[in-house]
Length: 131
Picture 1: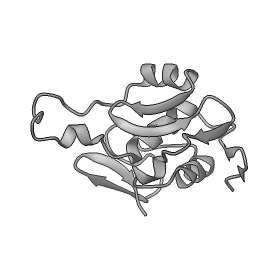
Picture 2: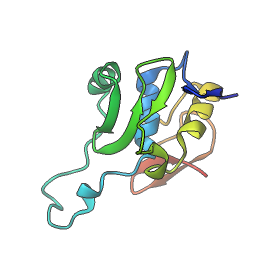
Picture 3: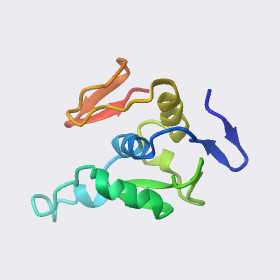
């Protein structure tokens, strides 16, 4: 079960790079990438594991590799960005992603195929958790 306190959601024991990958995979690309004036000029960035580790250490993550994250993963409790919420940008809520990670310890692999379970869907080549 995912523990939620007044300070945030417990993420202790989870691989934070994998957790960020899961949040990133469930967040829609920033609106900039759907702007027809830049179509073909700027492509949607892919997830970068090396940058992910640095971003986590840096504290609050606003956007990462072109997608809204809006939270701090640097501690054992996830803290959301006040006034801006990851859940409004994502297919699956932060609490649901964390509950999945606590239960399965896995995320979809980079080929867009689920590592475990069958609760995923692929939309436009990206893997999303089902709702």
